[in-house]
Length: 68
Image 1: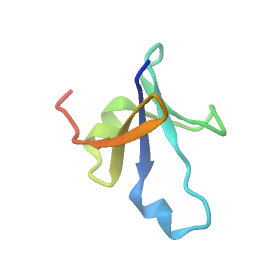
Image 2 (image 1 turned 45 degrees about the vertical axis):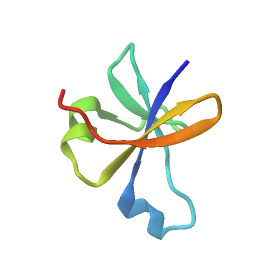
Image 3 (image 1 turned 120 degrees about the vertical axis):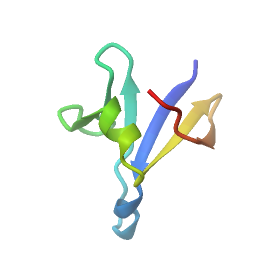
């Protein structure tokens, strides 16, 4: 099953970089380590500083944002 994940490019300046995954049930990108921290799909797609990745079979592929 494909997963859609995002990182905020400003966070790569630090020692760790939070990863967010799209929860299709809530339509939010939730932080993997803290589900209480999340962004709406619209916020992630609307912010050019988020980078999206499609994860399938342990392979990550950076993807372009598609219109909502």
